[in-house]
Length: 332
Image: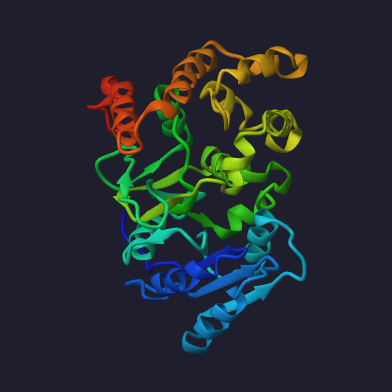
């Protein structure tokens, strides 16, 4: 890793809607970090539960905590964009009220961010837990055995070998870079953070921490879970992503998306949607077709697998896809 410089500052943004039961623990986890953030901004999206009272009590004990309230419900992306505009740190992370973070989350992420200040973001290994009492399941990407900078070319090579998504719960964005792309495209709904992460990574590269520092909580009936079940909405979102990539604003990164066979959904139905859309058919590459068949098979089999088995199957598939690259170092 490059020479260390003084660690930059971090703003934590917690978009919240009716998650009062998780908020106290979430705020405590952030303010009690080994390297506490500059600020923890809770953007409450017109909750109807006790969320605001919980935040106000936390703010009375911890001056770094502050509450921003929406008068009406505007959606999670609007809440994240409001937090981004309010933030003062060099870096900003967006942590759901029900996400979990380890005490070293800020310190380890900021160390890598400081080592590679030109990178658009820094991310650590994904992990998930199901419900309130589930076991934490690490889902390692194993992109490098040590912290490193992944250049845009490195990331494209990795993504050509095996699909992965930047774990939104474990990403620190360079604030000025995220502001420069306009924050999160709200019309992309549950794919807004995915799109922003990919754009920044393909433009500036990404710092990588090969450790589990944050955990995503899987909940049935969540915002994205409900959306995935609505084929018409999903098709519209895929088309919106492709329309953006065909626009002047994102034309510089469109070849990286296409070359990496990168779409936010990879079920069999995506092939039909692309075939039915003349303006988007050029995104239908052989690599994408192959990837859809592999991932589509996973989605067909997934409902029949016990929950505890799924992470192991994903890890094996990921490791198999990377066998040929195991001895090559791509970070620098």
